[in-house]
Length: 286
Length: 111
Image (tube, rainbow over all chains, first blue to last red; front, side):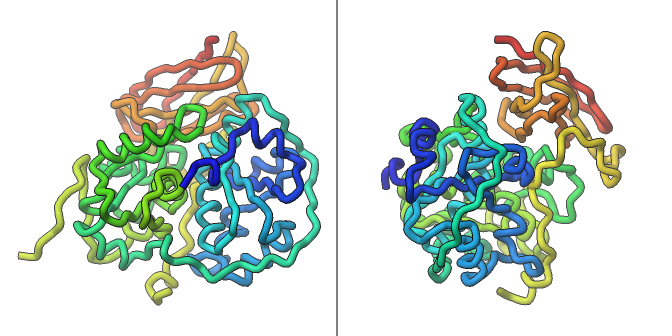
């Protein structure tokens, strides 16, 4: 795996804004950001209304995803360049989602919207309309998606990586600190999960650290490269960022993203939870 | 998809609140520790600045973008925090010891 196949620089992106066969797609936490301005020619995907089922807590299905990309004018053979705010959290989530549905060539804009803005590169508020396509999504590749039973079974057996902030991991905070803290789920983390905040994988301008720095980061954290890994956060978007690092940049073979994450795990009845800054041990019934 | 998962509600997202908006009525200031303020350069508010909240060990906790009025807001916990702002106009940081309720802070940028 080479980062050239999965990541593009802001400079490359600016030189390829009008290249046929390349589609820029903005996916933001702040879903109004695109409407204020966006990279010229980019289309928008709303992580909530476009990518989540409106009733059940799950993704849109294969037919819905096919219809969505067809309507936005994205073809099966297009190179999709994803970017967004908040250090590409939701763009990374969309990247993982595009991979789940088997898109052939999808890449992240390194640094996302933040680096683009700090570089003072062009932004436009013009409406963007692309001709519709006949997109055909593949069957979902659940080898990159972890469900709650996978997570419970992995405690003490596989790598679990908690990518939230240290205060969320320890149980001192229940949500990332730009959101109100009153939440229904319990605080803490999954026992045996390593704490490696997603932010350690990124530079201040939102770009990814070098492969050597990333290898050192997860090596020092004690991630056992011979085991498979499940990454989680609160709702699965920050852990997509780490999933991208481990699988797409470092080439780890088996990495899954747990999109249920803490909002699901912290609400389950009967599962073990660890509090504090240490990973914690496997509970043994007396 | 199991029945259990089907019965769970759609999770409240990480949707970034509008930084300029007044505190939502649902926010209980007797329970929340709100750190809010403005980013300035030469006394003028800076919109579109990236503001990070760092914990007492210097670790990243959250990041928001300032509103057109230069305003940012975090929901933290009582304790010592560092706010670090980054914008085209420069960088700046300041420390705050926050308590329950609203804590007001100003971050000044320098080249």
